[in-house]
Image (tube, rainbow over all chains, first blue to last red; front, side):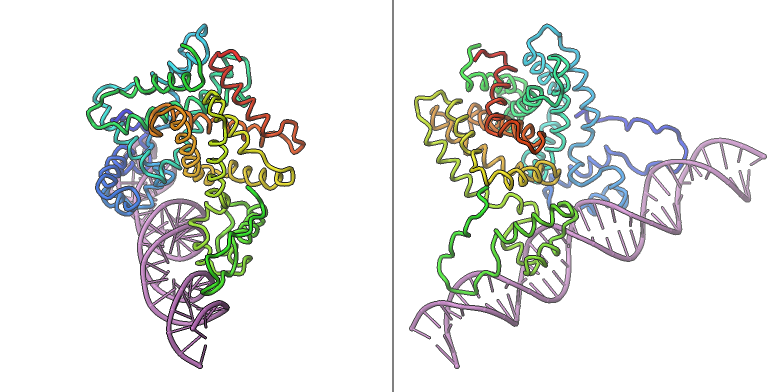
Length: 207
Length: 207
DNA sequence: GGACTTTCTGCCCTTGGTGCAATTAGTGTG
DNA sequence: CACACTAATTGCACCAAGGGCAGAAAGTCC
């Protein structure tokens, strides 16, 4: 969710130079989405603003639905690191929880765009649906770390459940975050903690 | 997931009679999906087999993606009933868990089609994504019941988390179920219990 | 038979998305 | 400078999903 990434340089400067960038496309797209809404923004319209042909947009994003997620792949690498950084002597759920919280920590000036992006994704049914595919990758990262910590296989039930449940917690927290008015009474990170506490409460667990 | 529902009668017999039924469309569609796969099956092809115009298909289903889910709305009513049937003195999570298990109990002869349907849905990315919208309704049913039991609002964190987590459990169980070979070593209901146990184990809870 | 009702259907149009071949804008070399 | 080389851009044709709309069709009821 870092706003200004510098389009990790080309391998060499040979061949026709790129006419645009992911950042430029996203900027144009988000503006239009905010104006007319996601569904009523055509790819032609985005292409026109960016100053590039519609066909070219598909070289930068697999689909219209992929535009709002931007650079999620790179973020996943970061998440993987966060998970492996957590101490091995922590209870597994605690290690994962801490990594999830860290994953959602953003510098203050990155908050508004992050919130805007997530609002768009979670409030637009097509995007909400499409996001499942991204979530699956995210869950898999967790499953792999949990498997490593517990000596299980990533495909086993407990790692998979861990991934699913962590996602459940996060989505609940995000929904609560976005439901609140602009004046952020509860920061996202607090809500993630509360969602986790809510789960334990629901399951009738002390602590 | 009842295979043969009888297309709950029209209000009266006035007007042009219906040329087909949800059941007929689903049957034709599933056959084609099995033959060519979901994506490569066009609505034209389905319409031709059913013997109806493509335009008419849209009067029965909102979209191609909605065909595999069939009659889910009615199933939700059943689920609502199952939840309210659970004793009030049970721990909330236990009541919900039992309702979820019951919800997934099917007569033996309904197993193969149910499994086939879920395999299609969970193995086809487009459908997996689209299903989120169905899951949201299902989660909401849980959230409402949990809210009723705990005196909270359905939108509050704990009811929402309960819905999300129940879904997480169910999806984990289904994935495990479908991963197993045809010879059903573990029935679905057992896997749902195991997924729940896996969650408690993950969270480091006794019992 | 005629009025009425409801469904089906054909037609046209928009939009997302893919395949393919040609074009373009650079770099590097002699 | 001209020429090869490379990689990105682009135009074009095409497919499939989906929606709007008006009219045809197939029943029932009087």
